[in-house]
Image (cartoon, helix red, strand yellow):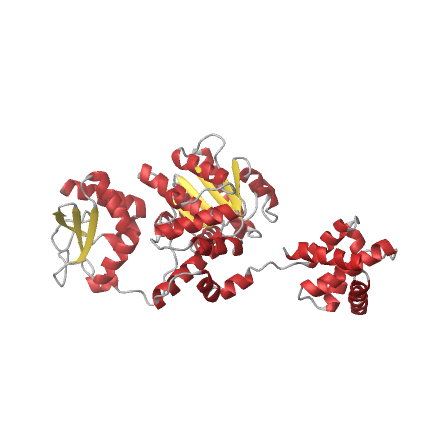
Length: 464
């Protein structure tokens, strides 16, 4: 037991770094093993809560790797007012007069200290979102390729053709989920590997801090010592030339050492305007995988998975309503489901289609189809076999002018745009031209049944 505990602490120290270890974990002591539970003591409730929330899961995994019989790790506050001094390995030791008192060592600084480069490793290894694993990722047609690539990298880092792995897609489509899942899978399969996950914004701020403290060499050495580097939201580096330069050199150094790099962005490398050509080229030389907008079937599967995980019964009709109306991204979809379930629990009411409309009225209204002027122009041009440019041209031929008037009429009926703005979208025409078009089309609708049918058909196509 003593040997197991010593190895666990050593691995923790290696994973989080010396500074983080001394700050939060050095004062852990092992009380003993109670059945399938390891009991660890800390001197204060604050330390117990912090370690439990930030390292509780990791401690359990490490214990299980040493002793498969251990299923749980219980972290408690030591009964004594002041704990016995401990060695770096967490065992009793003779007190040292020069060691600072507990109150002094735990007292928060009056002002947050500038991040030191020696702290980098701990900040980059943790934290990871516990719920973002491959098991909880719902796979569908829009994301199956990205999911397969992520799985490959997690199982075999630095595979030929998969380094770097570049994931791109819109907001809330699962890029961050896949990156966390890769990190969890690598760390669980090989605890000796160091996985550094951070946002591009954090990379930049750490680099600036290193410049200010004149410790860029430590910054470089610390970062390039990791086994897997994961950078989220790379588009944040657009326009940050110095940070791009440092990332480029870090990228090259890690790839040359056979280390894995995973990057995510909202656009593919070729569309990242503002990123240096040499970096954009390197990012695109590995595997580029996109996550498309969700389909109805995928959204429905996601809702079903979320409801099952939360052990909540949601009627199929409500699921279908949410999957049909909320199409932008998965985060909004999950947020709407959480809000609906919370309302039902708080007020003790069943979840129904009516209650969904009542509780989510603002969300559903925000996702109602909004017709754009450009869409109206395109649909009218197609209907009358015209070019889209005819909608904004100066041509006054009847076969062009009448469809243009119809498009202006529909723009007034189906959008919230003002008359001057509609006029600008139709070749910078005056608002009085739009008024005349609306009046003329309204008049023709009452006089010509065939024309009225044409306009009604166009309106229906645009609305649906």
